[in-house]
Image (tube, rainbow, N blue to C red; front, side, top):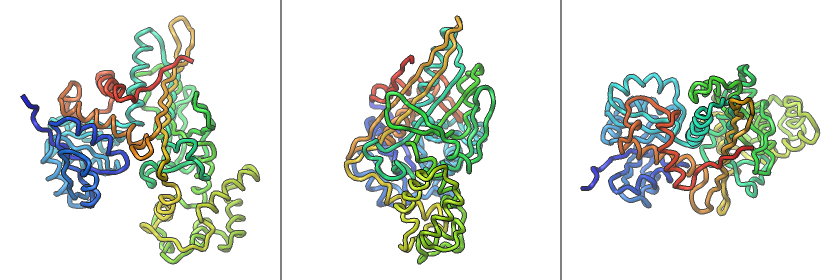
Length: 454
């Protein structure tokens, strides 16, 4: 007897949607509606998929009627749009009694909808991507195994980065965008908190890049730096490790990237507020002058002001970063094209061109968790779980695969009604019951982490 058809609404056809949609398309019982702001984007995405229909829909529209109608017509909605729109999607899903899956952290706005989701009888499963997502699957696995053997997890460290493969990291920032450039830059301004040796440390967003420290991720050879990722402190509770005195979740970049971005922050280039003076026809060097308060727009004056504002620790570091800014065109007489009236968005438009992957290039997802364990006999041991996944030139990026595939797997589990994926409410995979089914299917797809005792 054929399985009943499951109707899935996919919001967004961007960087990570492909592997998710392809996984769901394997099941002949699934039909997919792909919703984008433009019909051309939705149609292009659907062209290679069976049982897929394009739809024009703007989740950012003030009138949510179209969103509510589309959501109500489906059994499940996957929200791969920016996280700020997830609450509106879930509210529409509550009205339409439609399940939801996202790859984003549970925000306070989503957590507040837990009761309404339960009442509506819908599952809202979040954090089903890479980080957050795959990290949870292996954190829970290792922690549960340690506890089962009578051990304690005294320290938990997670570091994850979406990077260009080393041979493709040739630009002055050592970075290219495999996801939304705007989202990538805004993440560099998030405040962060973590627990170290029993003490909570809070870092303001403006200071995040300056907090980066060198780190090694064996067996990966190139030099890396890490900076804290959002609020790590609740994960002591989420992962049920009250015995831990250190809980740190961090983001990886190649060495030198954080200092470069810290300089751009100090100069005002990541400002997201509208500047009345930022207009088409202005040159890049004039914009840099206005942003940093230089006395003139010639390169000598700009460099002098940048050195004053940034206070570089050495001449070599000053030369490295200023050369990078020259490469970005910040001292050029070229006229800029303003985007959204902000320095951040205008810079994003520039970096989308300068820092995109070229044909034949590949990206890298590097993730490592480190657990410092104390056994009942007092002996200490360090366990690591590591993922080093490269993209396929001409195929899917590592970022798309490591975010989209777990999302597709989690979606299918919700559609199949497998316990606990049939439990109404707002959830994230923080328990064995949620993690094991996703992890086992992910490993069959070749995306398992390698566990070592070091």
